[in-house]
Image (cartoon, rainbow, N blue to C red; front, side):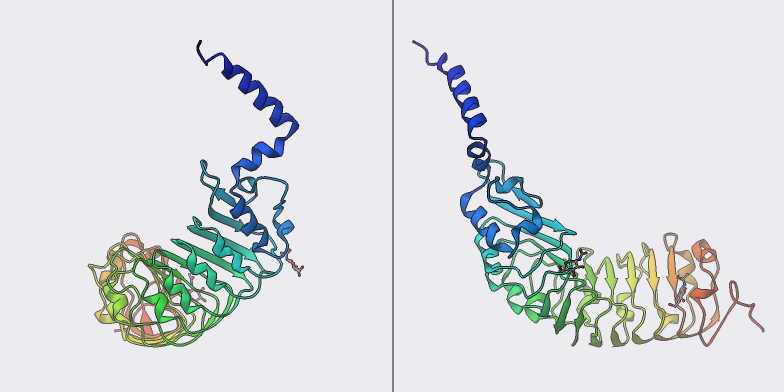
Length: 330
Ligand SMILES: *[C@@H]1O[C@H](CO)[C@@H](O)[C@H](O)[C@H]1NC(C)=O
Ligand SMILES: *[C@@H]1O[C@H](CO)[C@@H](O)[C@H](O)[C@H]1NC(C)=O
């Protein structure tokens, strides 16, 4: 006799079971250890509508493997999480991506147990996390993206983070970080990386390694950086966006050449002297440009995108002239 006729019966039994015990079936889609860890993760799981009576893989922000019901990603934004991140975060062994955003009531620091995770991406931004950026994040050797922007972090950028071998996106803007950029940052990486350190209290000269790294996006605005950053510029580089505004960079713009794909260049509020090179007017993709509040002189070049930049982009320099400023006197 074939066993096949049994199958419909099993289906009926399962259907009956699931209608009487719906939780039995759905909770199969949630590894029990992961559920336990998640329920301890924040002091008020109910903030997130995480309820122990449902399967954790169906909770808002929780993404699991479909077969084993293990948590692989947390994606929580615009939830007002009250309290701190518990060390139980380390008890989600397959978690490779954390993205927590816009939670002003989330306080404390990142627990050390996070180093047990196979993280490739860690984003905790616009929260009230405070204290130094933990040096132990340097143990997350697979990390390619680290974003701790808009928190209340103080202290330096740890060397251990700057040395992470695969890190290609580092976003720490809008904290109160001090000290210099570690010279090891992006050393050996040449893949249009992103560095976003604007609006901190960082000081000193920027390391030469940032020139070699051939960054795609460089945002260093609103710090206290000094020195000559001209090594970031050359025709052969790949940068799309460079914002060095509101610092104390001193360099001669006359000698700069520019990455051909440059779309944004903001050098406003620095101590930049010299003239604006004519080669700038050949950048067809440039759509945002500002050199106001420097010490530039001479004729503003014309051509390509230059006519889209108004006088405010050139105001408060030493002696710039020509469209859109008053014409040059001979
Ligand atoms: C979040 O909760 C805190 C404390 O309960 C409250 O002060 C704050 O206004 C809340 N923020 C939002 C965006 O709801
Ligand atoms: C250029 O920068 C100055 C100084 O921050 C600002 O006032 C001006 O509006 C900017 N121009 C444009 C077009 O963004």
